[in-house]
Image 1 (cartoon, rainbow, N blue to C red):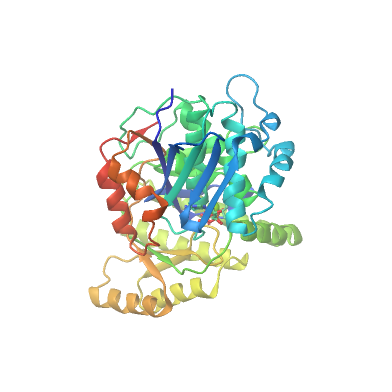
Image 2 (cartoon, rainbow, N blue to C red):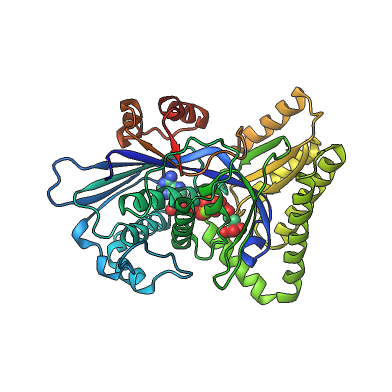
Length: 427
Ligand SMILES: Nc1ncnc2c1ncn2[C@@H]1O[C@H](COP(=O)(O)OP(=O)(O)OP(=O)(O)O)[C@@H](O)[C@H]1O
Ligand SMILES: C[C@@](O)(CCO)CC(=O)[O-]
Ligand SMILES: [Mg+2]
């Protein structure tokens, strides 16, 4: 029995090594971020028609469908838990197309498509009334920090809960524990289908991190072999600067462009992907050394530089990402690489320990002139969570009317955290 309203929440991620090569079944290393997406599910009062409403103010999308419009008969759901299959269900994809014809922006289309695909697949027959789904994120959207995976995980977990496929979360877990409950595996598998709706051919690393939290080395497997997800506890304390160039891009475009290059130049790109694999494996060994010393850190920095260079060669950098790297290099801050799909979005800089305050000021002044934004965030936090009986203040905060297009993510994070930190539960 589901008690409305309730919230789900999932983190963004930062990929330290191995983006893009992860799509080609190479290992990659990523960690959950403290920046998160929140989904509020509430009953519509006075709604005899049974509308399903979306309020996604982060991307300016407000939309509704009648429940009776949903092509329920096309979901593969029979009895019991619906299995997530390797490929999207083509009949369902076709059946959803007429519901999306009025949505023209690609940003809106991807979010609405992911919503509908997961909703129809997981909530079959379980929704007797109108519902509103409100999403707000403290992550920058489309900037390489896994916003698509975090919304997919929020949706998949909420629908799995409404559909009766998973029970309510009950654990107050230590943030470092990487979870492997049945519920998490189900959410992970279905959020992967959501990621497929948003960007075509995901490796699954982003949704795995958004579901399970923590830090992992991840390797996609094929032909029904389970993906390898090796949790990395006790990450060394590395000082990372996260910089958002605010240059918009879509992961779907970047991944398909790399696919074209890999297809056109199989030999040359094969070597690049193999190098990326070697980098991720060496970085993994370095980061898990019992004594992460100066030498380990120096090597990790060099691996970052090499990994970035290889990503540049695959065509996924951007002049603004190169500007971030240039400014950091000029001031000898450390080593910089793009993170996530690239093409804009964010870069990470592994900072040296001895950088003084004056140098930081110079760097931030440069960033400001270019409109770049830096984030302070912690790595390796909790995965997907559920909040029942949310406090009134939080409900107010989630209403679209109270939406401000925020610049100050810290403030938002604190206001959500303060009202709800006591009662979030994890699967
Ligand atoms: N808070 C949100 N509200 C609505 N839609 C969202 C939200 N966050 C993400 N999305 C959907 O995800 C898309 C962005 O996903 P995309 O994969 O391109 O970028 P990303 O996930 O932020 O970066 P990366 O995949 O490189 O980590 C948006 O266009 C939108 O459709
Ligand atoms: C570019 C990519 O490797 C990471 C996006 O965060 C795509 C993926 O692995 O799904
Ligand atoms: Mg994404």
